[in-house]
Amino acid sequence: MVVSNKIPMPTDTESLDLTEASSSAKKRDAKKTKKRKELVPREKSFEVKYSAPSGKNLSTTITSKIMDGSARTMVGRICAEMSGGQTWGNLPPATQARVYALAVMHQQLDDPPSWVMEWAQQDDLLLESIYQKLSEHEIFFFGGRTEQGDGDSGESTVCVTEVGA
Image (cartoon, rainbow, N blue to C red; front, side, top):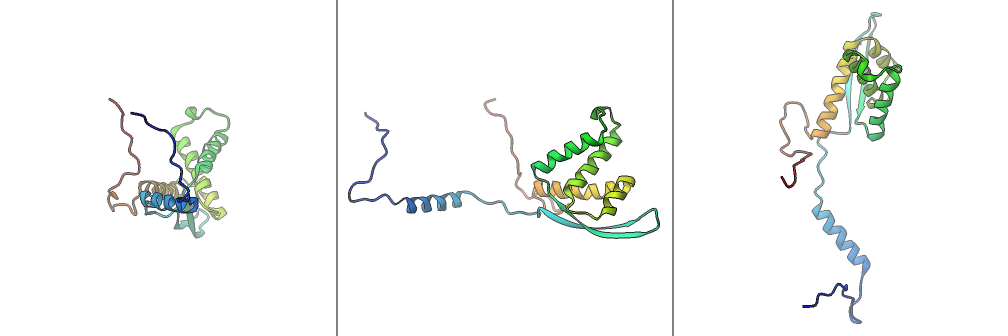
């Protein structure tokens, strides 16, 4: 039996229509690729009300924007800079958490008012409250859940299994 590796060429009576072939291939690919519905928007807004130690009541709306790869890398760089040259592991755990939360806020908040960042550096309760909302937004965005307590969407976004064991 002889197997030919040659691609069949159209005969004189047939024509090869690349436009039609391309269009058909795109339609076939579009059918195969099931787009995952964005359950949680990439940007989400939160209202912040804060009673500053100065006695002033402040409020604003902040917008969380899920970080891309570049922003995530910048979080690490900010943490390194804020560690003041100390080895990260030598910093107390509370300081690590505080610095990391500030770096995430700086990158994930879309143009927050200056008072938010100023007071978040001083008031851990404000920092933790905002950071928690940013973290929840990220977890829900990547996890595909719309709101806390809604249960799983039924579909995992990641599946890693061992091969050949």
